[in-house]
Length: 181
Image 1 (cartoon, rainbow, N blue to C red):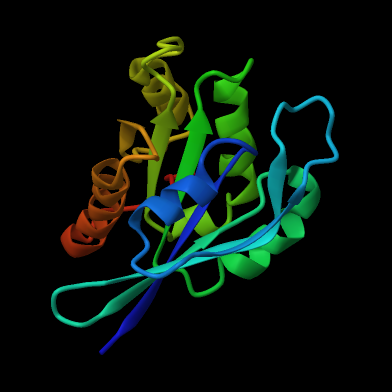
Image 2 (image 1 turned 90 degrees about the vertical axis):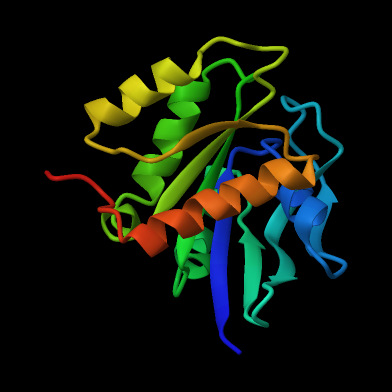
C-alpha cells in the first residue's frame, strides 16, 4: 500500500474544508475556530489544517490536507506542501477580485508549482459567472501556466473527485508543470 498527499489551498471561504469533508471516507480533522475577521461573513475559519483520506481500489491511500486561507498563515502553506503529490487551488468566484485571489496562491506556491501538478477549482460560478473560465485561462497563460480549470461545487463529492482525478491524470500523463521562465 502506498500513501499519497494532495494539498487543497485557496481563500478563506473557498471551500477547502467542505471539499475535504465531501469526499473523505473518514471523519475529517479540522482546526476551525471562531472567525475574528469582521470583514468576512463566515462564522468559523481554519487556522491549522484540514485532513481527510480516501482509499483507492488498489488499497493505496490519498491523504487530503487543507491549508488555512489567510495569507497570515502562509508559513503553514510551505510546511503543508512538503511531500505533496499535487496541489488543488480553490477560488470563490463570488469574491470581489477572484483573479487577484488566484494570483495570491500562484505566487505563494510559485516555487512548488515549477514541479508540482496543479488543478484549479472555481466555485460559485453558477451565481457569479464573471470572470469566466476563459478569463482564468488567460491569466494563467500570461504566467505561462497551463493548469486545468474546472467549475466546481465543493459540496458535491463528484466535483471534488473530478478535481482529484484531473490532478492524478496529469501525473499519469507526465504532463509538464510550472512555467518555462
